[in-house]
Image 1 (spheres, helix red, strand yellow):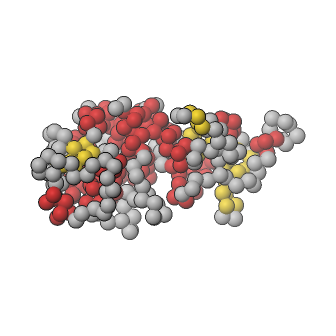
Image 2: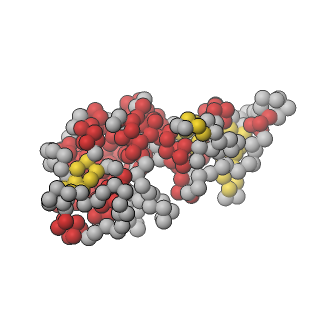
Image 3: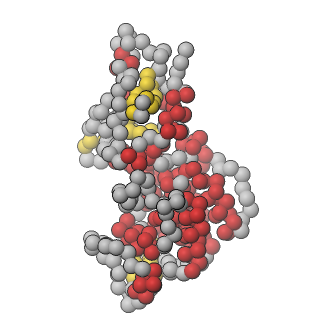
Length: 307
């Protein structure tokens, strides 16, 4: 499996749709597993439910979890099976969960330990994690997608665990130009917006092709942020206008709307469609937790071309 396909899978972990925000459990567990593999705690593709892994997972939850989140590892450990990230085997070497099964509720940690021998990561994922360059890309991708606001804290936690020397702030170009990360972000945003332009509403999809682009509201080079709340699906015309600060998402009386630059003139034919966006609602994702973040909207509004 190509690195881009793996990154896309990591960007689209099955989400808890009952809450108003994305639960941090699965990506936090993945970061903990990445750490133990890098440290050499799991020398082959067998991940055991050890006390070290449980504690490492709890360390991450302390950083990325909210007040309602718990650090019970059995939930993400069990439900990652449904994402194709890994498989869990019993002591006889049989699969505990078979793809296509109704996975049901997770067992208690005591029962999980009693019924399982180990979990094995998807083969190509484990192979990539053996190579420092690819591991760094995958780690950064998980953080960019799920925890962009905690990047520095997570970096320090990672360094402390592995007892590595503190390093300077990361070079954004290192990850900005990563095609696997970029492709995964694009797929995620297009899916969240149902392949529809958030400005004009055009929706054209043919097989794997879609007319819309995925754009960052705050550029990745500045934010390291691939979370859907920092993205938007736009047709090429409106993507071009956004990048040149001719239009911006905005907020008015609790509604998310479009605001065109005051430099545009509706008497000029080519500019009229952009001017006519003024006050029109943004065509938003179905799930409120993926609406554009206030910080991202404000960043765009302050850069709108003005007199």
